Length: 406
Image (cartoon, rainbow, N blue to C red; front, top):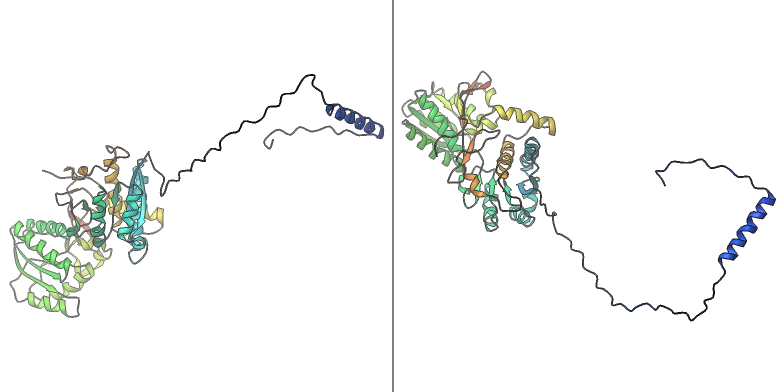
């Protein structure tokens, strides 16, 4: 025995005479053992019974991921290769961190690469492998491809897109919708006494939606839009738009529905015209630009976004674990897991995901604050208003901690 206790053996010294006696004794024993006993009567020989050969049962091999009877199976569909691999990997890391923080043993999340498999291929594999809920995808075009396939299988989709046109038919959007940010900052400005507004928006889908949201928000707040100008990305286009604005009446606030860098370069043009003293308003795009607060031209500007306090803590923990800073959008992946963990408390393993729970009017909470899905399946968010002040941002209107009303 390999693991037994070793007992020391006593060495025996053999002489010629003793060796001869030992050999003779061994031979006698061997001869005795070889003697044959002859029976006195007839011998009956047992012949073996003929048996039919038994067919071998085929071994059943389970395809794909083995069945999991102890956890809910959830799919994460994000790009892990290609041009969006960085944000996709950051989302995947965030879901892993959320599982660890929540200490949930009820969920099993499997990641599928939408860039390598294609959106349709990724969702088909996810459904075939028994996933009952899909988190992702990132891009609106992928949401439109995935949704009808998932709908037929009875699997809801909680996407990270912010394109409102992709919501519905079993698809839910967690992305930061620009209309909500614009509405929040306009309401705040109106509460600070601003009555007349101007707007600068880029041409394209984002600009069209920002324009519509801006006009509705100002009207709802009881203000007036003095001028609304659009521009292209071509050189000189913004200058021309600002020039057209100068032909209108003065305004107290101007919304620049663009990134922080574009907004900062535009402010100097505004200050030369009738927007010299206008308060600059931004959108949710500024919250994902770490350099926004460091731009002197934006000092005093207001913008609305999801709360940042918990995100800073999350970013520090993420950096410590993964050795790099997270993408700002990765918090969507973290909060999607927290949402799933909460619903999983009342979700029986092996049954379809209880989609109706996504419409809980009390909403959910996470790194990005409180949110709930409306009848349009778009996440309604509790936003805060921040002011850029002296190279940093200061919260001037905190986000509500929950939702009032139905």
